[in-house]
Amino acid sequence: MDAPLANIVRARLLEKERRRDACPAGFDALATLTWKSPLKRKSIAGFLQVLSPSHMKLGALNPLGQPLVVLATDGRSFQMIDTLKREFFLGYLAVLARRLYFSPALLLGGWGDRLYGIPPTLTETSKILAADSPREFWIMTPLRDGELKAKEYALLSTESLQVRIRIITDNDERIIARIEYDDRQRQGICAQPTKLRITGLVRGAEINIALRDILAENAFTAEDFTLRRPR
Image 1: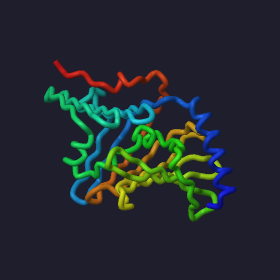
Image 2 (image 1 turned 90 degrees about the vertical axis):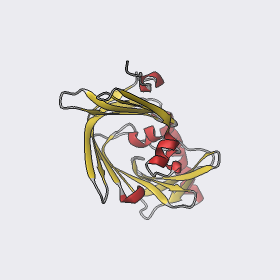
Image 3 (image 1 turned 30 degrees about the vertical axis):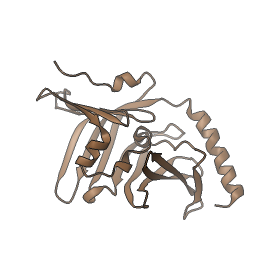
Image 4 (image 1 turned 180 degrees about the vertical axis):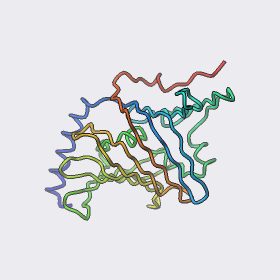
């Protein structure tokens, strides 16, 4: 992307970020999550709660709407409750990722914002790159935590500035996740996609998330994403 056009796009994005302060801090929704891999397929009906930029709570519900398993994270650590077995687990996401054969680099960046579907915040190291279509452009943001490095590429519409695709790569530019957004229920900077498709995962796995009954949420705090050990 040539420098003048990149500067215009950057100015629009910075303005969008200022207006984004008026967006809800997160959302609460009913969710159906489907995990597909060459070896198995599994669906979970439950809820998803998000607080920008990194807090997330995912729960599986029984047909009566009672929680079976709940997982909460702040982006670094996690807590999980199995209500049937009355078991409580906590630890670091990086350890859980390794046990599930995910790249730890996948944990860099804000998964709250990724599930929310809002544009990345521009940083001093962000770059605006041309896309194949003049109606789209990429924002590349380097991510780092100590020796762990990754990059996030977000494909945005030049007109709406809504994110259409996110791609996360490791330090060797290998894709470790690709997120596609679809079926936004309205226009505007706070529009929440109701369908997310996450591919490029380890062992050919794919995650599809369908959201409904979405409620914008400004009352969430970090405390709402802390689970209590069952007695």
